[in-house]
Image (cartoon, rainbow, N blue to C red):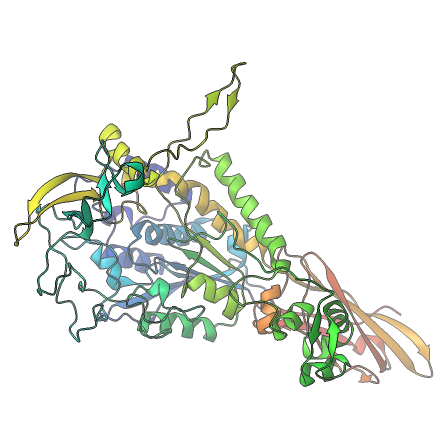
Amino acid sequence: MPWSRLLRQSVPTGVLVAVLSALPAMATGTSGAWPDGKELAGRLIELARHERATLHEIGRSAGGQKLRLLEIAPAVPRRGGDPAVLLLANCEGELPLTSLAAVELAAAVLAGGTETPAAAVRWYVLPVASPDAHDRVFAVPRASGLGNAAPVDLDGDALEGEDPPDDLDQDGLITWMLVEDPAGTWALSDDGLPLAANPARGVPGRYRRESEGFDQDGDGRFNEDPSGGVDIARNFPHDFAAWTGRGGRWPADQPETRAILQFAFDHRDIALVIVLGEANNLYRLPVVNNRGDTAALVTVPWRLAGELGLEANAPYPLDLVLEAARRYGRRQNLTPARVRAMLSLEPMNRPPIEDLVWWQAMADECRNRLAAQGCDTSRLAPPLPGPGSPAAWAYFQYGTPAVALDLWSVPLPPPVAAADSTGSPVPAVADTSSPRPAPELAALKQRTEQIGLPGWRPWTEVTLPDGTRALVGGPEPGALRTPPVAEANVHVDALLPFVLELPGWLPRLTVSAPIISDRGSGVYEVVVHVGNEGRLPYPTTMGTINRRPPPVVVTLAGADALQENLRQVLPQLPAGGAVAVRWLVRTGRSERLSVTAEAPSLGTVTVTGGQR
């Protein structure tokens, strides 16, 4: 069945696995059978015919292509408003599996039941965040790492794309090239795998590694300025790495990034961001910030000291300052974590330790699902979200929980265990006596030679225009991050259902009936408990630090406040817990009282009356 027909059928997630498994791998490489941008757009247009779905154009790429985002309304809208999930896929542009998975996830949401976690929220799904780069996956010759259509001058000569790679062996792919060079730092193992030279261990350098091609502009460098532009997955504001070429000139200088940011800031109902791409922050957790030595002396600046009732610029033990924040900092939303950040005790590129509780629980659940599906085999470890990544921006700056997931990497063979004298297996110990090729390259080559899957090209000898000999071959473009279509279900079958259940983690706002106590002389105390029935706090501790998203606001109506303001702000609602809110008021009839709790991504809850 061609993709053009498959993508016009609304199929549940489980059906996707069987369909993908039945498709043959194309001899042209790992990308040959993937749906291109037009096919994905056609699928989105079909899905938008559903009564709960709306297709939006949120912007244009650097090459002028539409950024199509599918909005899916909840199956049963809540009276006070619905939280939303923003799903971004394929910001790199080179991972067609993530784009297809995002479209099929949207189809599964629309085809699923009305009582599922996925049906209880609003979805904003952007399957192709970098359409220009996605198109390059289908170009001939096919290369990797080229980015969007924005012109980039990587070699700083005021010219753009004047020295692109060349398909020397005419196989339609731009692969590795090992150029003979006595000063090179690469060698080949006996089985034809490239490895770093190590003369001290008897492996001298024989080659210089380049991208396939030759020096077209005569400056002595190979393919140093290929055509192509910016990697959108490196162009977001948080921890942006300047002057990297592929990351952009400055944060969000690309129209794709700005369109995503504008959409996110215009939709304050977004409570969770999910990024399908190369990175994964559940496979291994990010390094968190420790509280540090609470007995250490810190100097409190005057503005913070005034809010905490302390003397400005005087040294205090950190634990005393944090205790003052717990007692007196509520008016200005001065949580202990935010106070630590204001005292510059924590760099803002690591999560605070308080967020590790839910992060660890989410990671454990993800791993358990993979294990249940038999997908917990040894694999190439995915990277954490790097500088300028959308997931890091969403968590550190936008203030929502952010889940980054990769859908596939090269499965590595398990280490061979030895046996002791009793026959019991003992842990395998890595052999460091001689340099070894990277395990992912060895696994890729083995899969091609023994199973017949595409991904590795045999070395072909070529002669460059200057007479230098070189070898062309090795991993195909994208082969380490994108599977052949025939085995695309390796992680999709396990991870897509997990993604569909993630909305069940979101905070859910509740308000108890007011309890009214007579304090005499016409004065009453009104108490309500504002609760959170979700598995995530609101906001995250990182969110309390950067004050995004807005906190829960609780408002009392129908009485005159004597002590507290009628409008109170709750710095944070704990997961599965509640916060008591009190007022001293003058009031007449209790049925006139009403208490409203609201936050943009939690909706609004109002209770009336009360118990005396």
